Amino acid sequence: MKQIYLASHSKARKELLKSLGLKFKVLPSAVEERRSIKGISYAQLVKLNALKKAKNAALKVKDGVNKA
Image (cartoon, rainbow, N blue to C red; front, side):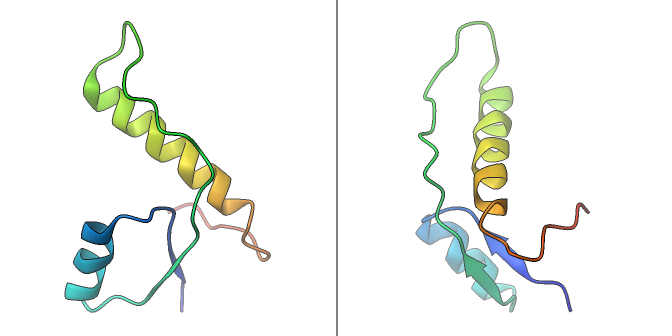
């Protein structure tokens, strides 16, 4: 079975995954989230922050991360 990793301390995200009955492991990321970057939309900024956090957390997974 595939492992789900959460690269966030977000209580809301943890509760969402729990409410869906999913088992997951929290891998906190050391990445500092950007609040704004000139020239990109909020949606792009959210994706950029999420990708940076995911890449950082993936470094902590010994067996690698499978891209879905």
